Image (cartoon, rainbow, N blue to C red):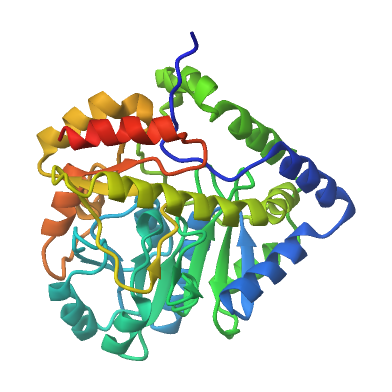
Length: 394
């Protein structure tokens, strides 16, 4: 009998979308179509397509630094390591703000200090598709502080009926492996208003229409489509050299253009990606209902009006030992650890001077106790019941 192993996350991807994406890269203008869709979806004026979400974030941060020389960039104490990579790649001075483990948003104590620090920009991360209340934070910050939304994990996320990428000055989306929508690679920088050209913007604009064909993205997408199926995923997951599920810091690199194939596959996957987000919400609702009487793990709190994309379901165990025990029991069910270290600790290791606005206690809690359960459309009713059984034993 073939062992069934669930991937922790899964991108909306079909073989038909891959074929259509490759075809459109040769006969059409998939990048233009994707830019038009993103402009309409997020209500922005400018869309720059890049080789990755990290490159897009680096460009957004570099632009903020150019607008306000000498002022720092504020990033969270806990997030994907690529956030730190993008910030370091822009040569910005950094300040770190702490998170509330219950909401994954800036802690109440931190917000006042953010306002007083008046950084060039604050990077807000919609982790796992849980939306940060950007309008509320906007009201508490000086108007000259730019808000950059990292929506790399937030495809299908809305707040008060609006896209999660519609509240800040800039927003970043990612089309990489394991995101809500993928083309094998790629990212986009969404700008609310057209801005005067700074070096970072000129760099991206010069690349926007010169993307390579990118047949490698077709191969990568086909591999993702095949290898993430639960009856096959156990094979790559069992090969240590592939380092699936491990978190590693990647040094920044100059931005490149998104390939035409990647843009085509993403454009062909939009409808499926939106359907997949709805399925993820249904699965989270089912898990919440089945675990309503169990308090061994805690769900992240979201405010009224939030409609998370739930790329994964973040959960808090009562302590690190409980989390590790759950991960051992539920690894084949897609339970997975998240980012293992606070970003300030990683920054110190890289020789970066660390300035904390208000400690990093929230980040320590998240590093030690947060884990995720899968939400994607590959889950069956039986999978959901087995995940419930594991979690209810905590």
